[in-house]
Image 1 (cartoon, rainbow, N blue to C red):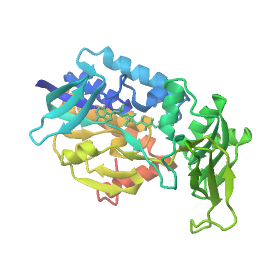
Image 2: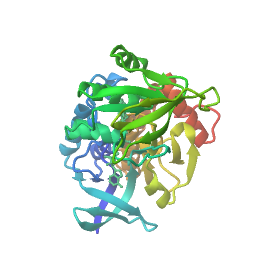
Image 3: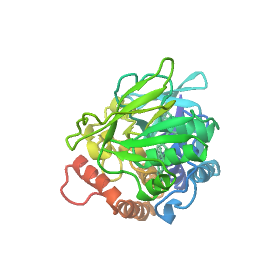
Length: 364
Ligand SMILES: Cc1cc2nc3c(=O)[nH]c(=O)nc-3n(C[C@H](O)[C@H](O)[C@H](O)COP(=O)(O)OP(=O)(O)OC[C@H]3O[C@@H](n4cnc5c(N)ncnc54)[C@H](O)[C@@H]3O)c2cc1C
């Protein structure tokens, strides 16, 4: 059994920031990551990030990931085990994991869950044909393994992920037959949408997929226009010949470990699904278990890093580390989160957090 002060589950921007912050205050940290390299979503993000300079805006996602990994590697108080998947968090506090073919047991004093989110799917006939991918899978294929998924793609979803992955497909020489979006407006940043439209790709709002077809793999898709009650408009069907259908229809927090650890959970649409109830210092109703990043509500890497830092500081401080500086560090992190959430996109998160905390006033 491995004894450790703080166990961080997940090595994305939230987990890496949590590990570095806790170790900087003197806590011993073990970070477990199921992939062969930490970095989470950042490893496949080749575009320059938006937002505030404090959260590395202007740098490419994978560069931010490398910087966060380096911070942990340079800190002797952080141990990172890759290819290690956490399987369970038990009543007695023991955490089990599978790592490189071995069953492992860890007995941490505090736990930070930073497992991120998983891609959503939608139902339509033949949605199990080869050639139908989640947008994250397409990004991994192209930007991590250098493989294009096909020749001609229908993208479903015009949020930031759908727009960014469409643009990256175009950069890789893949044709985009169109981007369809069920809602009447484009959800992603208009700067991304304009770039794509200028290249001649139609973005069809109020449109959905009716079915995919093909013998052994995708050969095409039937799409149609929706009325203002989201019902198909008769006579509006179009047949698009494509060999890939890419779904960018949102993410859900990956909260199985929180459910299993018996954290009190609540369904909050603004936070993208079931999330653990926690206080403003990110400690859940299972005392000593903190959450940070997309697992606590799908947002962005920028807020995931600040939440990770806050959870790391709070977990370390609860063990008596750095108590002279933690009030200042906590206040700074909370102020950064408020700043990040001050814009229109952040307001959804603020509303979600207020619902989660049953508050009518200001959330952290
Ligand atoms: C296409 C795309 C573009 C984006 N662009 C931007 C942008 O421009 N700016 C921005 O701020 N954000 C952007 N984001 C969002 C950002 O990437 C995420 O919000 C951020 O990565 C969330 O960080 P996280 O650490 O919570 O989760 P993740 O990055 O998902 O990391 C979670 C980690 O946990 C690991 N894990 C999960 N379960 C286990 C387990 N049981 N055991 C061990 N390890 C586990 C996973 O393998 C993963 O490495 C984008 C996302 C996408 C998909």
